[in-house]
Length: 237
Image 1 (tube, helix red, strand yellow):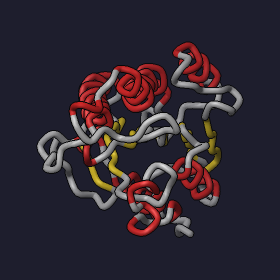
Image 2 (cartoon, helix red, strand yellow):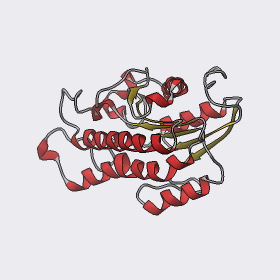
Image 3 (cartoon, one colour):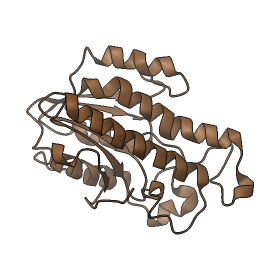
């Protein structure tokens, strides 16, 4: 469990919002944040929450943000959503595997939905101390791509990174104290990574979430618009 002083950069009674809280990492974020004595409120959103937030239903994102405005402003917003594979598909290994349905499903969750979160939820950040961390992936780095494959996932995360970078530039003009950044969680033992040796090489979700919260705690406005690993290393776009 984290020490209560871990999130010391956030004010007493700070409010946190976790989107994608039904997933492994999202649920761990919620649990750890609720254990923080100086965290005044933790709100979790997902497809079955009240209000529901479903990336397949664009209007649900705006509606959820409208409801959340009554609970804000938020000092911390974390987007923990993401899809690599489903019951219907696995990551593509070669060009011959590409097809519209998989690309559309992957971009919906990894790019389009998070982009709408940026639109509707970034304005809910606290004006003095507001951090919005968007989970991305190292394989979304174009410069770091050495192995190829995983076309839709790589491309959707690269597109997400561009959305984050562009939104951070705009946000700096209206909310200069805000921090918006892309966060690579590393390999975590969740349903997303298990088909790829995740159970043997991934960190437990509680450890991963704790490490990411430690990084989030250290983030300052000058670092807004950057791409970091959970260990605080800067990743190339």
